[in-house]
Image 1 (tube, rainbow, N blue to C red):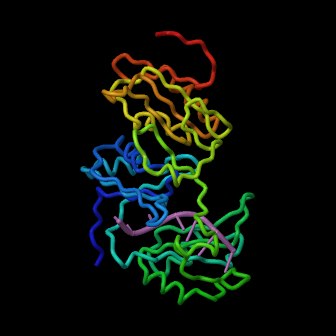
Image 2 (cartoon, rainbow, N blue to C red):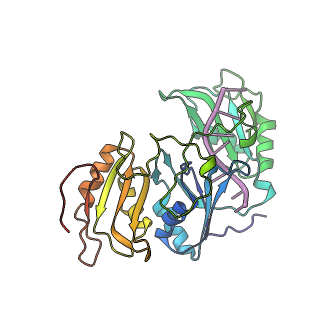
Amino acid sequence: MAEKIDQSNLIVNYLPQSMTQDEIQSLFSSCGKVISCKLVRDKNSHHSLGYAFVKYEDVADANKAISSLNGLRLQSKVIKVSYARPSSAAIKNANLYVSGLPLHYTHQDLDNLFGQYGAIITSKVLYDGNGVSRGVGFVRYDKRNEAEAAILALNKTLPNGFQAQLTVKFANTPNQKSQSSENSDYTDIQQSYGGPMRHQSSSVRYSPMAANDSPANSNSNNWCIFIYNLPQDAEDSLLYQLFAPYGAINNVKLIRELNSKKCKGYGFVNMVNYEEAYNAILHLNGYDVGENRLLQVSFKNNSKKTSNR
DNA sequence: TAGTATT
């Protein structure tokens, strides 16, 4: 018996590794009142596992989040927003690793072949940098027993169109990764946003080139945009809302007054690609955010001597 | 022959 899905509770997948729970909550708050937000982290290392749960007060807002945030590009990822299934033992460990696929095989082919044995949540074929299939992939079923059935039915078989034997097994979990990397082999940066405190500085791997806290930073993967004339009650989510339609965002930062926490009227958005950043500026400069406020939007580093105000 | 979806 399928348990009923709670349509106010969402799961967000494919989150950038550096995105914090606060940033996720901020982003999703743009669609309505969020009553809980939980970024799932590795128990030991506390690194983000790249997915989160967001629960809204209203189902209508959750639906809004699915329609407006699913497919949103953040850094190098395209996030997926969908209803969270009710948690149960039956849905755990239902991810399969498949190898020996013909090179023309797509994830749709996987769906067709594996769909006979259960409901597929997601499937994926891995490709190299040139877009050539690696001949391996993943199939995640709704239920563990469906995955087991697929292994029994398909492992070491030669389905139609296959030149080599198909191998189907349970995928490794994050803990049983590769063999000997002693200390964690994550190299991603934990973003340290301007927030008052973070207690993890000692364990944070730090790469100066990749850490883009400073608004002044601009390199080929990070184009810093300056936004002026924001309303006092602006939130990070406003910046996400405004800029996300134009392309991949690295991060956003709203500058606030120390005491009142109100927006000082300006902020920064870091975008990945020059073309998209340029296009965003083109469309958002002069944008009317209400109350007769026209945004001034430009690249941060264009040394204009703007002393207006 | 290896990404990361169940709190």
